[in-house]
Amino acid sequence: MSSGFPRPLARFLKGQYFSWRLRALAARPESFASGRTAVAGFLSSPFGLGVGARLVARGLAQAGMAPSLIDIAPQLQPDRSLLDFSMPHDDDGKGPVIIHVNPPELVACLAAIGPDRLRGRRLIGYWAWEQSRMPESWVAATRWLDEIWVPSEFVRQAVQGQVSIPVYSVGYPAGLYTEKDIEEVDWRGRLGLAADSFLALSAFDPRSNIFRKNPQGAVEAFKQAFLDDDDARLVLKATGHIEPSLKAELTGGDPRIIVQEGYLSTDEMLALIGSADCIINLHRAEGYGLLPVQALCLGVPAIMTGWSSVTDFADCPGAFLIAHTSTKQPFSEGHYDSRYGAWAEPSIDEAAAFLRQVRQMDRQELESLGKSASAWWRENHSPSAFLSRLPQSTRNLFTTADKQETH
Image (cartoon, rainbow, N blue to C red; front, side, top):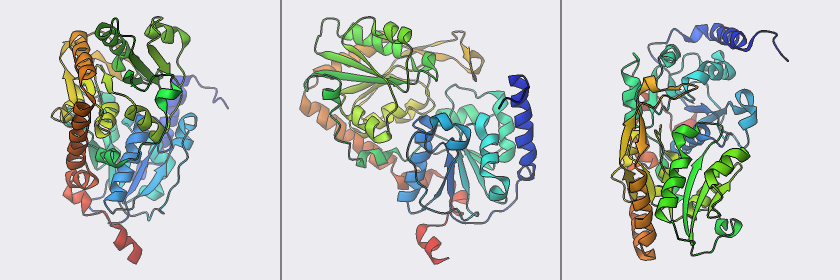
């Protein structure tokens, strides 16, 4: 039902109402009770924030924390609540709450959870941002929080100088992906590819930010690398629906470039990544870099722009970081704005050279490189390594699964 108010005013009034409901949370307590930690976020969504929230929850569970889970997607983004999702543990109303949403959704998320459920608990915001300085509008969200976690050192530097609460770079327990049994999906057969065709994979969300993800760069590099190679293929995975005009622009009539539309579960996406010979991610900025992370965990080489959050795993075997120039290209969409830092413009020549280099590796070289990449993620980003990066004062409030059973 329409409110009858102009849309900007309706958003403002809604925000004011949520803030009024949460007024009791603004005065943060000096001490907190320990208990079962909770992870709140878009847990039934296949998009990036949902993937990240599920990964945090899985990592804490494997580290023995048995977190409770609060899925706010059905209430706040019902069109994106697409995955079957269960909540195995009851929330005890005591332990820290990790709120895996960015500031624009924070107040609505807190209101959806309910102030009574949050009162007296340590509230942790998990934020991701892609430029070197976060928007000033995000600062106000800190009034509800006790600390902020971020996925990379790049994001920590973008946030820390503007807020008065602690900011910690904790990453994700992405090493879990190395232990994942990839679903037996014959993606090559499904896409009509020969088993020995060279397959490069890129991915983007048409409803998000194509300028930042830059699939056009992947297309340019592929065409330059394999001008006359009829055995090479580039798959562009688009999350959801893609407009025919954009699809035509990306493929340019080249039958070797395949656009795969639709929503995939995490397991299906990992199977697609695992079927590729490499991924190519010529982003202009990344808040984390989920696609190259998943690829490297599965032993698939990742060719990516050497800028922003992905530099945290620059020394991982199989990570090919591309040179770039900085550009202040005037671009503004949503919260993104060139005021918040330069964008990277990746070298297409170098990306094409890396594609040819991977193409020329024999199977034994690729397998050896892949094993080294997976081992690097298991060592540096396991659930226990993730737990060790969390602030000790917060870890002291986590109740482990065995202690929970005795209460």
